[in-house]
Length: 314
Image (cartoon, rainbow, N blue to C red; front, side, top):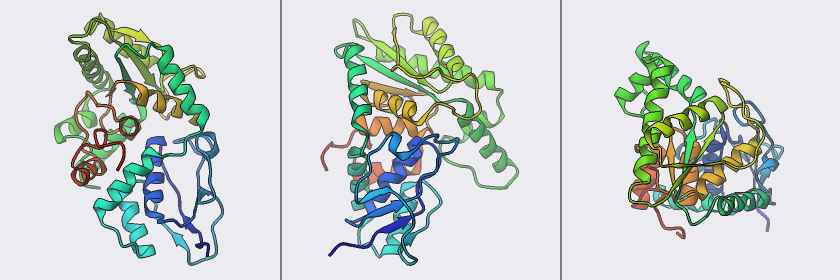
Protein backbone atom coordinates (compact mmCIF):
# COMPACT_ATOMS: atom_id res chain seq x y z
CA UNK A 1 0.00 0.00 0.00
CA UNK A 2 1.31 3.46 -0.89
CA UNK A 3 2.64 5.48 1.99
CA UNK A 4 1.09 8.86 2.75
CA UNK A 5 3.25 11.80 1.70
CA UNK A 6 5.09 13.96 4.18
CA UNK A 7 4.88 17.71 3.84
CA UNK A 8 8.15 19.47 4.76
CA UNK A 9 8.54 23.22 5.20
CA UNK A 10 11.33 23.14 2.59
CA UNK A 11 14.89 24.39 2.07
CA UNK A 12 16.01 27.97 2.66
CA UNK A 13 18.99 30.28 1.95
CA UNK A 14 21.38 29.94 -0.98
CA UNK A 15 21.94 27.05 -3.37
CA UNK A 16 24.62 25.25 -1.35
CA UNK A 17 22.52 25.40 1.82
CA UNK A 18 19.43 24.22 -0.05
CA UNK A 19 21.27 21.29 -1.53
CA UNK A 20 22.35 20.19 1.95
CA UNK A 21 18.79 20.56 3.23
CA UNK A 22 17.28 18.66 0.29
CA UNK A 23 19.76 15.84 0.73
CA UNK A 24 18.99 15.71 4.47
CA UNK A 25 15.26 15.41 3.80
CA UNK A 26 15.80 12.66 1.24
CA UNK A 27 18.06 10.85 3.72
CA UNK A 28 15.23 10.91 6.27
CA UNK A 29 12.38 9.97 3.92
CA UNK A 30 12.72 6.20 4.41
CA UNK A 31 10.76 5.55 1.23
CA UNK A 32 7.90 7.95 1.93
CA UNK A 33 7.03 10.65 -0.62
CA UNK A 34 7.93 14.20 0.39
CA UNK A 35 6.33 17.42 -0.81
CA UNK A 36 7.90 20.71 0.17
CA UNK A 37 7.84 24.46 -0.29
CA UNK A 38 10.40 25.97 -2.67
CA UNK A 39 10.92 29.72 -2.27
CA UNK A 40 12.05 31.75 -5.27
CA UNK A 41 13.77 34.70 -3.58
CA UNK A 42 16.94 36.80 -3.71
CA UNK A 43 19.03 34.15 -1.97
CA UNK A 44 18.13 31.57 -4.63
CA UNK A 45 16.41 33.23 -7.60
CA UNK A 46 14.74 30.49 -9.60
CA UNK A 47 12.41 27.51 -9.58
CA UNK A 48 13.26 24.00 -8.42
CA UNK A 49 12.58 22.81 -11.97
CA UNK A 50 15.34 25.11 -13.27
CA UNK A 51 17.98 22.81 -11.81
CA UNK A 52 16.42 19.56 -10.58
CA UNK A 53 14.01 16.94 -11.87
CA UNK A 54 10.96 16.17 -9.78
CA UNK A 55 9.85 12.63 -9.04
CA UNK A 56 6.72 10.99 -7.59
CA UNK A 57 8.46 10.68 -4.22
CA UNK A 58 10.27 14.03 -4.04
CA UNK A 59 8.99 17.30 -5.49
CA UNK A 60 7.72 20.76 -4.56
CA UNK A 61 4.01 20.75 -3.86
CA UNK A 62 1.09 21.75 -1.71
CA UNK A 63 0.76 20.64 1.89
CA UNK A 64 -1.16 17.39 2.48
CA UNK A 65 -3.90 17.17 5.14
CA UNK A 66 -2.86 18.15 8.69
CA UNK A 67 -0.93 15.57 10.66
CA UNK A 68 1.72 14.72 8.05
CA UNK A 69 3.90 17.81 8.33
CA UNK A 70 7.53 18.31 9.33
CA UNK A 71 8.24 21.92 10.20
CA UNK A 72 11.87 22.98 10.27
CA UNK A 73 12.98 26.51 9.44
CA UNK A 74 16.76 26.00 9.10
CA UNK A 75 19.00 24.39 6.51
CA UNK A 76 21.61 22.65 8.72
CA UNK A 77 21.31 18.92 7.89
CA UNK A 78 21.63 17.52 11.42
CA UNK A 79 18.95 19.88 12.67
CA UNK A 80 16.68 18.59 9.89
CA UNK A 81 17.57 15.03 10.89
CA UNK A 82 16.58 15.60 14.51
CA UNK A 83 13.28 17.22 13.47
CA UNK A 84 12.36 14.42 11.05
CA UNK A 85 13.46 11.80 13.57
CA UNK A 86 11.13 13.19 16.23
CA UNK A 87 8.21 13.89 13.90
CA UNK A 88 8.29 10.52 12.12
CA UNK A 89 9.71 8.30 14.84
CA UNK A 90 12.75 7.38 12.71
CA UNK A 91 14.91 4.64 14.18
CA UNK A 92 18.28 5.45 12.61
CA UNK A 93 21.54 6.55 14.19
CA UNK A 94 23.38 9.75 13.38
CA UNK A 95 26.11 7.70 11.68
CA UNK A 96 23.54 6.01 9.43
CA UNK A 97 22.03 9.39 8.63
CA UNK A 98 25.50 10.70 7.69
CA UNK A 99 25.95 7.84 5.23
CA UNK A 100 22.51 8.42 3.78
CA UNK A 101 23.19 12.17 3.54
CA UNK A 102 26.33 11.65 1.49
CA UNK A 103 24.54 9.16 -0.75
CA UNK A 104 21.69 11.65 -1.23
CA UNK A 105 24.13 14.38 -2.26
CA UNK A 106 25.80 11.97 -4.68
CA UNK A 107 22.45 11.18 -6.31
CA UNK A 108 21.04 14.72 -6.37
CA UNK A 109 18.53 14.84 -9.26
CA UNK A 110 20.33 17.44 -11.37
CA UNK A 111 18.88 18.23 -14.77
CA UNK A 112 20.80 16.22 -17.34
CA UNK A 113 21.45 19.33 -19.43
CA UNK A 114 23.37 20.98 -16.58
CA UNK A 115 25.48 17.88 -15.96
CA UNK A 116 26.28 17.46 -19.66
CA UNK A 117 27.19 21.14 -20.00
CA UNK A 118 29.62 20.95 -17.06
CA UNK A 119 31.26 17.83 -18.46
CA UNK A 120 31.54 19.42 -21.90
CA UNK A 121 33.06 22.55 -20.37
CA UNK A 122 35.73 20.49 -18.60
CA UNK A 123 36.66 18.66 -21.80
CA UNK A 124 36.78 21.93 -23.74
CA UNK A 125 39.13 23.36 -21.11
CA UNK A 126 41.57 20.46 -21.75
CA UNK A 127 40.66 17.62 -19.43
CA UNK A 128 44.28 16.42 -19.33
CA UNK A 129 45.65 19.66 -17.85
CA UNK A 130 45.41 20.07 -14.04
CA UNK A 131 42.74 22.66 -13.32
CA UNK A 132 41.89 24.41 -10.04
CA UNK A 133 38.45 25.92 -9.60
CA UNK A 134 38.43 29.18 -7.64
CA UNK A 135 35.16 30.10 -5.96
CA UNK A 136 34.82 33.73 -4.89
CA UNK A 137 31.98 34.59 -2.55
CA UNK A 138 32.68 37.93 -1.01
CA UNK A 139 30.09 40.68 -0.84
CA UNK A 140 27.14 39.09 0.93
CA UNK A 141 29.19 36.53 2.93
CA UNK A 142 31.49 39.22 4.32
CA UNK A 143 28.48 41.20 5.48
CA UNK A 144 27.09 38.11 7.20
CA UNK A 145 30.36 37.58 9.07
CA UNK A 146 30.36 41.22 10.07
CA UNK A 147 26.82 41.07 11.46
CA UNK A 148 27.56 37.86 13.34
CA UNK A 149 30.62 39.32 15.01
CA UNK A 150 28.89 42.57 15.92
CA UNK A 151 25.99 40.63 17.46
CA UNK A 152 28.57 38.70 19.47
CA UNK A 153 30.23 41.91 20.69
CA UNK A 154 26.83 43.31 21.66
CA UNK A 155 26.02 40.03 23.47
CA UNK A 156 23.01 39.40 21.26
CA UNK A 157 24.29 35.95 20.38
CA UNK A 158 27.21 33.58 20.77
CA UNK A 159 30.06 33.60 18.30
CA UNK A 160 29.22 31.52 15.23
CA UNK A 161 32.08 29.06 14.88
CA UNK A 162 32.23 28.70 11.12
CA UNK A 163 35.70 30.22 11.09
CA UNK A 164 38.38 30.66 13.81
CA UNK A 165 37.87 33.31 16.47
CA UNK A 166 40.63 35.65 15.28
CA UNK A 167 39.49 35.38 11.68
CA UNK A 168 35.92 36.11 12.79
CA UNK A 169 37.22 39.26 14.50
CA UNK A 170 39.09 40.20 11.32
CA UNK A 171 35.95 39.87 9.21
CA UNK A 172 33.96 41.73 11.82
CA UNK A 173 36.26 44.73 12.14
CA UNK A 174 38.58 45.05 9.13
CA UNK A 175 37.85 47.35 6.16
CA UNK A 176 36.63 45.63 3.01
CA UNK A 177 39.88 46.38 1.19
CA UNK A 178 41.86 44.45 3.82
CA UNK A 179 39.47 41.51 3.59
CA UNK A 180 39.78 41.43 -0.21
CA UNK A 181 43.56 41.60 0.02
CA UNK A 182 43.66 38.75 2.54
CA UNK A 183 41.35 36.53 0.53
CA UNK A 184 43.13 37.22 -2.77
CA UNK A 185 46.48 36.38 -1.18
CA UNK A 186 45.04 33.13 0.18
CA UNK A 187 43.54 32.17 -3.18
CA UNK A 188 46.61 32.95 -5.24
CA UNK A 189 48.88 31.16 -2.78
CA UNK A 190 46.67 28.09 -3.24
CA UNK A 191 46.88 28.46 -7.02
CA UNK A 192 50.67 28.77 -6.92
CA UNK A 193 51.08 25.75 -4.64
CA UNK A 194 48.71 23.74 -6.80
CA UNK A 195 51.04 24.36 -9.72
CA UNK A 196 54.27 23.36 -7.94
CA UNK A 197 55.97 20.53 -9.81
CA UNK A 198 53.57 20.72 -12.74
CA UNK A 199 54.79 21.59 -16.22
CA UNK A 200 51.47 23.34 -16.89
CA UNK A 201 48.33 24.05 -14.93
CA UNK A 202 45.37 26.39 -15.05
CA UNK A 203 42.65 27.96 -12.96
CA UNK A 204 39.08 29.11 -13.54
CA UNK A 205 37.34 31.73 -11.40
CA UNK A 206 33.68 31.31 -10.45
CA UNK A 207 32.12 34.40 -8.90
CA UNK A 208 28.85 36.28 -8.61
CA UNK A 209 30.57 39.62 -9.04
CA UNK A 210 32.54 40.56 -12.16
CA UNK A 211 34.69 43.14 -10.39
CA UNK A 212 35.74 40.69 -7.68
CA UNK A 213 36.56 38.03 -10.29
CA UNK A 214 38.85 40.50 -12.06
CA UNK A 215 40.54 41.38 -8.77
CA UNK A 216 41.42 37.72 -8.22
CA UNK A 217 42.80 37.47 -11.75
CA UNK A 218 44.96 40.57 -11.24
CA UNK A 219 46.32 39.18 -7.97
CA UNK A 220 47.06 35.85 -9.68
CA UNK A 221 49.11 37.56 -12.39
CA UNK A 222 51.32 39.03 -9.66
CA UNK A 223 51.53 36.07 -7.28
CA UNK A 224 51.23 33.07 -9.60
CA UNK A 225 52.31 34.36 -13.02
CA UNK A 226 52.73 30.87 -14.55
CA UNK A 227 49.08 30.01 -14.00
CA UNK A 228 46.94 29.95 -17.14
CA UNK A 229 43.50 31.53 -16.86
CA UNK A 230 40.63 29.42 -18.17
CA UNK A 231 37.19 30.84 -18.76
CA UNK A 232 34.17 29.61 -16.84
CA UNK A 233 31.02 28.28 -18.53
CA UNK A 234 29.05 30.51 -20.88
CA UNK A 235 26.60 32.50 -18.81
CA UNK A 236 24.73 35.76 -18.56
CA UNK A 237 26.76 38.90 -17.66
CA UNK A 238 27.72 39.09 -14.01
CA UNK A 239 26.54 41.94 -11.79
CA UNK A 240 28.84 44.63 -10.43
CA UNK A 241 29.41 44.78 -6.66
CA UNK A 242 25.96 43.67 -5.57
CA UNK A 243 25.29 43.11 -1.87
CA UNK A 244 23.18 40.06 -2.67
CA UNK A 245 23.82 37.58 -5.45
CA UNK A 246 21.85 38.35 -8.62
CA UNK A 247 22.84 35.60 -11.04
CA UNK A 248 20.11 33.15 -12.01
CA UNK A 249 19.71 29.80 -10.31
CA UNK A 250 20.68 28.00 -13.53
CA UNK A 251 23.93 29.99 -13.69
CA UNK A 252 24.69 29.19 -10.06
CA UNK A 253 24.16 25.49 -10.71
CA UNK A 254 26.37 25.65 -13.78
CA UNK A 255 29.16 27.12 -11.63
CA UNK A 256 28.72 24.50 -8.92
CA UNK A 257 28.82 21.56 -11.32
CA UNK A 258 31.83 23.00 -13.17
CA UNK A 259 33.62 23.47 -9.83
CA UNK A 260 32.97 19.79 -9.13
CA UNK A 261 34.65 18.94 -12.47
CA UNK A 262 37.89 20.71 -11.52
CA UNK A 263 40.84 18.82 -10.05
CA UNK A 264 40.87 20.89 -6.85
CA UNK A 265 38.92 23.79 -5.35
CA UNK A 266 40.01 27.00 -3.65
CA UNK A 267 37.36 29.03 -1.83
CA UNK A 268 37.63 32.65 -0.81
CA UNK A 269 35.51 32.00 2.26
CA UNK A 270 35.69 28.70 4.12
CA UNK A 271 32.14 29.14 5.42
CA UNK A 272 30.59 28.92 1.95
CA UNK A 273 28.52 25.76 1.57
CA UNK A 274 28.43 26.31 -2.21
CA UNK A 275 32.05 25.27 -2.77
CA UNK A 276 31.84 22.66 0.01
CA UNK A 277 28.98 20.91 -1.79
CA UNK A 278 30.91 21.07 -5.10
CA UNK A 279 33.90 19.45 -3.37
CA UNK A 280 31.70 16.72 -1.89
CA UNK A 281 29.85 15.70 -5.06
CA UNK A 282 33.08 15.85 -7.08
CA UNK A 283 35.23 14.28 -4.31
CA UNK A 284 37.77 17.02 -4.92
CA UNK A 285 40.33 18.42 -2.44
CA UNK A 286 39.92 21.90 -1.01
CA UNK A 287 43.24 23.75 -1.06
CA UNK A 288 42.33 26.63 1.25
CA UNK A 289 41.96 26.31 5.06
CA UNK A 290 39.62 23.72 6.56
CA UNK A 291 36.03 24.62 7.31
CA UNK A 292 34.72 24.55 10.87
CA UNK A 293 31.10 24.04 9.87
CA UNK A 294 29.51 21.62 12.37
CA UNK A 295 27.87 19.57 9.58
CA UNK A 296 31.25 19.03 7.89
CA UNK A 297 32.93 17.98 11.14
CA UNK A 298 30.07 15.58 12.01
CA UNK A 299 30.23 14.00 8.56
CA UNK A 300 33.98 13.62 8.94
CA UNK A 301 33.56 11.98 12.34
CA UNK A 302 30.82 9.58 11.22
CA UNK A 303 32.36 8.63 7.88
CA UNK A 304 35.92 8.28 9.11
CA UNK A 305 37.08 10.64 6.36
CA UNK A 306 36.37 14.14 5.13
CA UNK A 307 33.15 14.11 3.08
CA UNK A 308 35.04 15.20 -0.03
CA UNK A 309 37.41 12.24 0.38
CA UNK A 310 34.95 9.53 1.49
CA UNK A 311 34.31 6.56 -0.84
CA UNK A 312 31.94 7.24 -3.71
CA UNK A 313 29.77 4.21 -2.97
CA UNK A 314 28.54 3.77 0.60
